[in-house]
Length: 423
Image 1 (cartoon, helix red, strand yellow):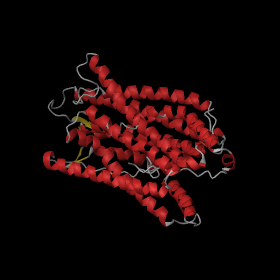
Image 2 (cartoon, helix red, strand yellow):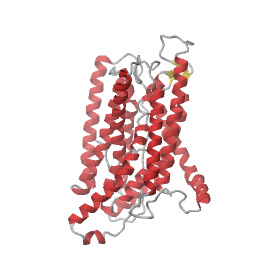
Image 3 (cartoon, one colour):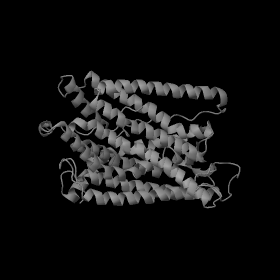
Image 4 (cartoon, helix red, strand yellow):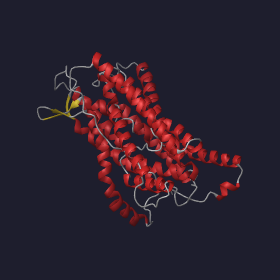
C-alpha cells in the first residue's frame, strides 16, 4: 500500500515538497518555519526510500513476468496495470483514514508497516521462484528512479463560514465540490493510460532492440524509464527561468499560464509522444519483417535509443500535466480535506491503470474475432501491432483533450487565485 501522504509520481518539485513539509510539520512541533524538524526529516527519508523500492519493482515487473514467470505480453501488461491501479487507488482509503479517523502520523506508520510486509512477501516469492526456475543469465540492473512530487502551497484560509454551518451542510458542500471535479477527473484518465506504457509495452519494445554497447555491456530495457526523470530535472531550470518568463511576455500576465492551461499543454505533449511511439514501432516492425537479419533471433538491428524521444516527451508532459493535476485537486478541496485532494490526483493514475488493462482486454477480443493471424499484443513482437495500439491511444488522448478544453471553459474554481479557466 502506497503512502498517500508521501506518494508522488516524479522527481519534479522536490524543493516545494520539502518547503511544505517544513511548514506543516514544524507547525505541529511548535517550531518556526525555518529549518527542518525531526518529523519533517523522517518523512522525507521515508518518501525517498519508498520511491526507490516502488520504482525498482515497477520498472522491472513486466520483464520479470514475461521472462521468469513466462506470462504472455498482454497478460503481463494487464497484471502490471492492475497492480499499479491498486497501489494508486488505495490512496483514497489512506486519505479517508488520515482526514477523518486517525492522525496523519498514525496513518503513515500503519501504511509503512503494510508496505514492508508487502515487499517482504514479494521478495520471498521471488527468491522461492529463483531457486526453482531462475534462468542462468545475468539479471537486469534495477533502475533506480527517485520520483518526488511537491505538495502545493498550503491554503490556510479561514474556516469560519464552514464552522457556522451544521455538519450535514458541510457534508453536502463537500459532496458537491467532489462532483464538480468529476468531469475534469474523467478527462485526465487517458493521460494516465498513456503513462502506463513506459512500464509495459515500451519496455517490451526495448527488449527486442539492439541494447549492447561495446562487446560486453548490455543496457537493461527498464533503464530508459529514467529518461523521464532526467528530462524533468533538466527542464525544470528552463521552465522557471526561461519558459515562464517568455510566456509572461506573450500573455502579459504575472503567472504566464494557469493551472488548467498547464495541464492542457502536457496532454498535447502526451498525444505527440504516442504518435512518435507509433512511428518508431512501425519502423521497428518494418525492419523486423525485412529479412535482413537472422529470422530466428528476436533482436531487431535497431538501437534501443530510438525509443528515447517518446520517453523524453512523456517526461516533459509530466512537468506540465502531473504537477498541474496535483495543484488543481489540492487547491480545489477545503483546507481540512487536503489529503483527499492529493488522493484524488493519485486515483487518476489508479483508475487509469485499470482502464489500460480493460482496453488491452477489449482490443484482444476485437482483434481476435476480426480474423487476424495475431492479436495486436502477440507474444512474438514481430507479429504484434503495437503501432496500431499507440495510434489508438493518441486518438483517444486527443479526444480527451478536446473534451477537457470544453469543460475548463465553464469551470469556476473555489479560489480565483488558485484555479482558472482555459479562456
